[in-house]
Length: 114
Image (cartoon, rainbow, N blue to C red; front, side, top):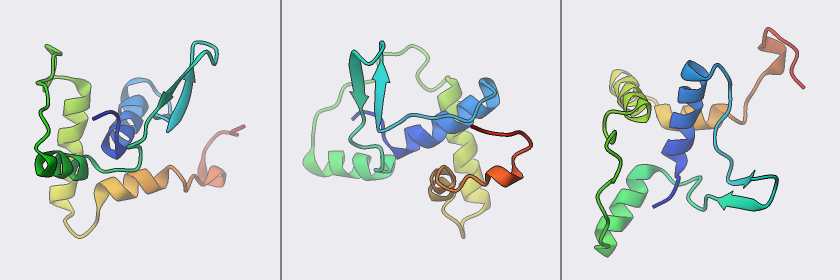
């Protein structure tokens, strides 16, 4: 059901680890020189809420077509985040990671940011 909050969080961690940058998906992202825009209406919605809603509505969904499904970097990061959550049940790990995107303390970064 399109990109959701968990995808945003996973993309942040993937980009930090594998692309050496702090970036993620935007709710509205321009592509091809502003000729097209990707709109992510579920950007703030947790994946588990979408799964529950889908189950409640009994919508028919297709199986993932990607041969790498379950074996990707994204799945690896999903599993790591789930492990962090099980190790720290008193906090909402995903909510904290997502909220951190709005709480960047530039004075604590080692390089000047523009």
